[in-house]
Length: 164
Image (cartoon, rainbow, N blue to C red; front, side, top):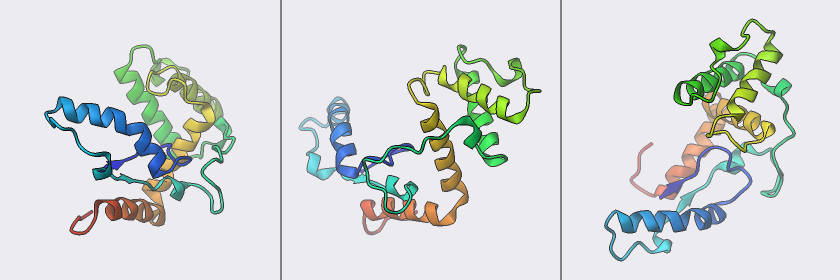
């Protein structure tokens, strides 16, 4: 059973499993599965489409978000928590307390996004994708319907007898 993480709203379960399968098979062999595991024995739970607006197809990209689209409150706090965590684990990321944190909120959000884009974890992630991911976490944590749909898909892929 494989479960994708954040930012997988534009691919489907078969595409993701095709991309993941070679590394999974290698890892299983290294872990002692002498004959490996057949690909048909592995399922990918997919719920990324729960985060797309109704009627959007898989090929549609992320909305063209900007720093100004980061919501006040939860989204700003989560972004600053990401920034702090990235700075604690990566010396190349300027920590929030070393930045001019007395700046107005839009500038603070821009500083956080700029700092995170310098971390290896977020390297290569476009600003609009980072803001989309932030909004996706927000929706998953605070929208019970979205969370239930995602969890339901995972439980469905696991099969009978599984508990949340």
